Image (cartoon, rainbow, N blue to C red):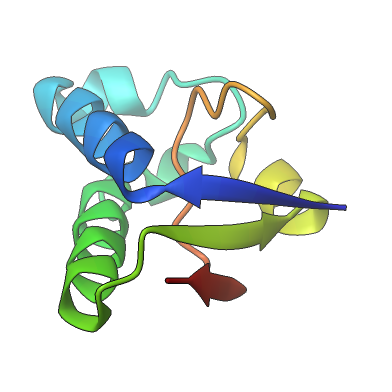
Length: 87
């Protein structure tokens, strides 16, 4: 199953992740602690790609979501892998 993640939600998640110090990002349930130092960069790149190409949302699969600790439908944590975009 796939889930849509809007550009607005990507920005909300980016803002939240940026507000957390590295130590707190390492404590996010479902986010591999070793990825805590790169998740902000992944979120920023995702937002910039959405903006660059004028996409309103991206589509991510359950497998990708589970792998990075995102729990649909609330998307409480952020995913950086991208499987598809929608204009």
